[in-house]
Amino acid sequence: MTRPARILLISPRYPPSLGGVERHVAMLAGGLAERGLDVEIATTEPTASASSVEIQGPITVRRFPTIGHDEVFLLSPRLAFWLLRNAGRYDLIHAHSYHTPLALVGAMAARLHRIPLVATPHYHGTGHTRAREFLHRLYRTLGAWMIRQAALIICNSEAECSLIHHDFGDRPTRVVLPGVETAVALVAGATADEPRPDGLTVLAGGRLEDYKQVEVVVRAVGRLPSNARLIVFGEGPALEQIQATARAAGVLGRVDFAGRLTEADLAYRFRTASVFVSMSRMEAFGLTVLEAAAAGTAVVCSDIPAYREMAGRLPDGALRLLDVDAGPDVVADAVLAAALAVQPTPPARAALPSWEAMVSGVLEGYRGVLSARGRLQPEGQP
Image (cartoon, rainbow, N blue to C red; front, top):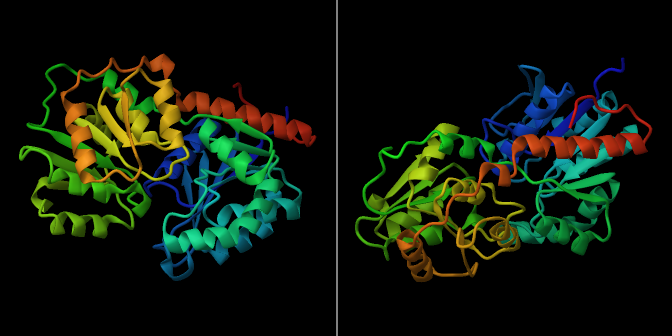
């Protein structure tokens, strides 16, 4: 019997850090390990001063500090040196996120050791701030080289896939949707008499970055009835600015900053909120929007390609799309209209993407890459 394939997943951050990429990689790692593969994670830990190794059940997590504890660019020479020395121990490297240098270093290590590279770019097409947009343009040549090294690019949506082909040409791609299984499963256990907050409850959040535009939702609260409250969940570099905006707008007393939520708490928030709002400028997929819709909550979101594609997968009226530059008045009007409208029936669980299906799709991609390279086939059934 052949040994299980050894897979190295490279992720900018990893739980307990919050974010869509973090959750995506964690669910993939767990699913691959359940299928019998030998899985390791290489990631950064900006708050650490030394590298560490954690054994989480069948998964080994290697964490490396960043220069100056940086949480934005995630430059980690220790991780880079470790990759360049040790990549040959693995049968396949799967690098996540075009928007940090880690995937680029993973591509260099894969080429050096002649290991096949799979990339999931979580690609937005630009940076999240003006400074990062400028750096993004400078990085384009190196990023394009990384994309060309990948034997397969796994995209989170057709919208992301189209953007990859537009910006980098004809590349081998595969669309594998992330899952929403946790929220849907918890919704199934909800009861009709479950306590709900009084008044109009608006929910927003996730990984708190400037491009998520949570501030426009905060300003919209001042245009809503006095019984309306906003719950902002999650953590991130934009938190202080969001709080300052609430203070300046005179609505700080109507905004609850919930911080990091457990999966059960987040599912409860989704199904008891009146409206979930995401005015993000860019997303490769948009997990929180789909989870809110799966919970039967009204959703107001920006009209960006990933959300537009999602609207096509959900019942009519599940998402209300607004111009990405919509101001607080427009957002407030949409929130009120969504809260008063009769909500469509939540989509059946079978109609939604699941994490199990995501793992199967990725595993099938691995098989194709390893077969084409004449390498060991990963074990496990799709």
